[in-house]
Image 1: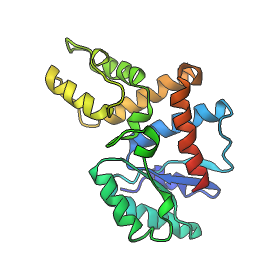
Image 2 (image 1 turned 90 degrees about the horizontal axis):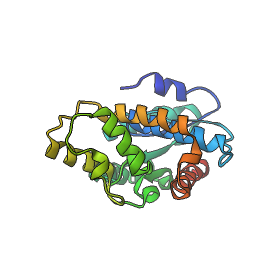
Image 3 (image 1 turned 120 degrees about the vertical axis):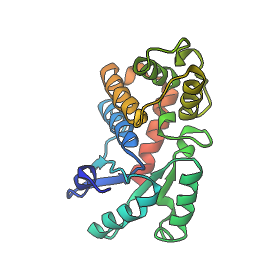
Image 4 (image 1 turned 45 degrees about the horizontal axis):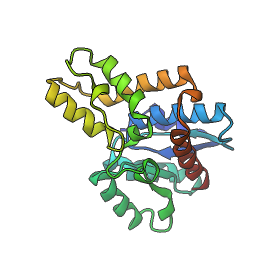
Length: 207
């Protein structure tokens, strides 16, 4: 569904990057603020991240944004099966002449089947998850593994611990991670994580 987030990106002078969901929007907005504050990037135009509401409506959102200046916007898709399928469809259809504008998060996380959460260091992510779910005997921080997609790990942990993840849990974690990241500042993150962020935002700028 089109919403105020999309309307925001239609403002003259903005550089929209279409993402799949609201979680992506929160994470990327936080990362953008950290990178700009540290002078790691200097966007010429304001970067905004309108969520498409999923891969099914991404094509519609892209078409709407294209109507503004006849230039297809960059689209960032998850590395899961649904994201890969949408990438193929777009590159053979609407984005036939702009294949480089379809970005896959896998290329920036270094993981297969990854999502936006995998741009966040696992320790920080686990800290937020454990604050959200305080009852399990085994905290997520005790079992989280580096080098594996985080969302799948949370779901597996929750099942084993008898935790019922609420609908929209990913968005709530994203909001809290954003707040914590901005409070602690870029100095709290290792260079490897920051380098991934810079690489992604450079791709946004060059698309």
